[in-house]
Image 1 (tube, helix red, strand yellow):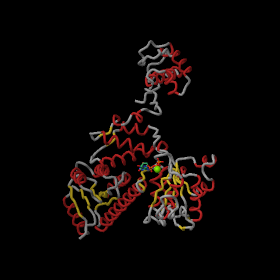
Image 2 (spheres, rainbow, N blue to C red):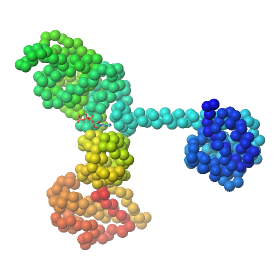
Image 3 (tube, rainbow, N blue to C red):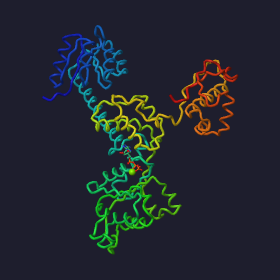
Image 4 (cartoon, helix red, strand yellow):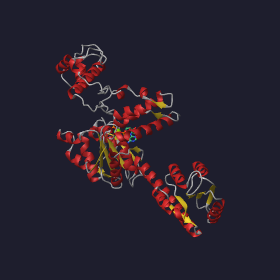
Length: 489
Ligand SMILES: Nc1ncnc2c1ncn2[C@@H]1O[C@H](COP(=O)(O)OP(=O)(O)OP(=O)(O)O)[C@@H](O)[C@H]1O
Ligand SMILES: [Mg+2]
């Protein structure tokens, strides 16, 4: 007989255990018995129960304490308490502490069965719910291989789902490495054309006649060397999708022909006279500012509007830092698999560096950094030493919390001290070259020079903080104020 669930029964009285066991087993439950709290807890540690029936009054660990302990092990475990009528008050307070229900002694068999049935039912619902939620989360964090959990990427996922089924043209914009090509593929995968071809056109830097013959094919004798007629990518993409990667690079001459494909869904072969009908979904991507190109006369305005029907904007990675841990994990697993390695993890310090960096190359750059670390690292841990220098150099400085003593501080002194430390650190990073240090700080060399004089910092000489005779400004510092280290270490 299929078991209805595992029930843990904890009672110090042997006769009660026997009654409950017989009753529950007859209903089809699997029953485990324990004669005190400790034993019950041991059982709960080694297996999962669907409900527990626990006597309140027991020598040693009482039922209420056991309830707390059981819920520490398994927050969702429904615990049913059995209590003498006299201690109902206790039972009610136990309900507030998370007991599922209570039964007073003497009890009726039906009553016990009803409560246990409710408990296991609730357990099942909660479990289903958790599974659903986890599923949903997994879905939201990995959409067709696109990783992201922040609101920025979730909006992108939503747009893909909404826009994919139609035949509308979609323009994907975003900086280099933000995942435009992944999104283009996801659109195709979620469309009704998924079982037809997805054709990518790398519009970058092809001369217009070559690009056009690639796209539209040519007739025999269209140009020298065109001995045979040839079909183009538009033919291959018929009933499927065609993806124009870097549409901003399409020469103006070819743009007019593209417009025709979009508007009329037809094209002509190079050297041909016949109109050829085609049913394609057009997806385009660019990291150029097409609007600016329109203004500069490098991109046709009518084509721009045709493309711009639905625009998916991919945010740069620095604007969705919440995705960095998940992406790092994803790439770590990917490259660990490729290199037959297991158990690779990122140290918190290394993750901190990744979280702080500006990622001008976006996800592609992050992927490269992780690949390099996995390949170069021999151990299981990826620490800061495996993160390349460009990432390690902080792009912005975090100022830790100040400890301000109750007797107060001198604002001017603290700021002055911070200023000095910042200048010293920058000078050190600039190898003592003042012009470079000024550049790094975004100030004029003359301003830096004034500051150096004010702080009595020697020229082209590394100084450790406090190594020089304190100027009169710093000597007034109240010692209890800790000045944060600004080097980002
Ligand atoms: N959200 C993401 N989840 C997982 N991988 C991603 C994600 N975004 C980008 N990648 C990966 O980063 C790399 C770059 O992505 P992709 O080629 O799609 O970027 P792109 O925007 O087309 O860049 P470019 O403008 O330089 O062509 C690819 O290896 C891709 O798989
Ligand atoms: Mg691309």
